[in-house]
Length: 191
Image (cartoon, rainbow, N blue to C red; front, side):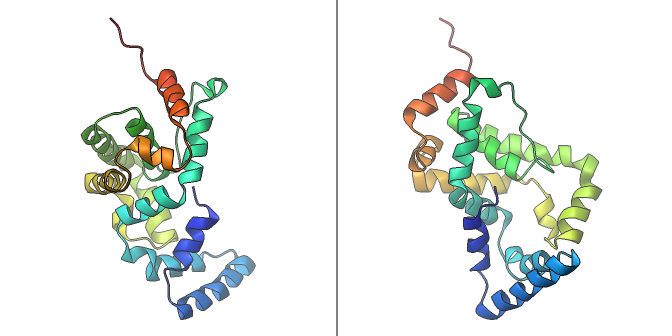
């Protein structure tokens, strides 16, 4: 879900000097294969924001990508489907939260589902630590799936849009598309 819009947003969070230094590091990375730019930017910019704030940036700036994925899920020829990413809590956690919210699952259940990801991360915690903390320089908290993180994201959506349906509507995912999605993913009510 890393769009140019997100990358530009992150880039502009730093002051002028940091931006120039980071451009030099991009060149060094390109020539050497190192990840100095990411570590530098993570250390000076991203680590100053909470995981929830980073998720909220993705929710806002990658809305078209999120909607594209949900539209893909609406294609009957794409089902059944498995949703995953490298660790299963960030991109996957956000997408699943949006899907569950669209299906009108209670916020508390979405939060609990996200927080349960922490147990699933235990078997790969060394790999997650190596990739997130050592390789890219993120703070240790970025490896956790804490309920407060998802609470803050859902509160942001509720406060700014009123509901997950309205959030998706604001990005062009119509009520007709939403109803089609629900028909695909919900059991019909029995009489």
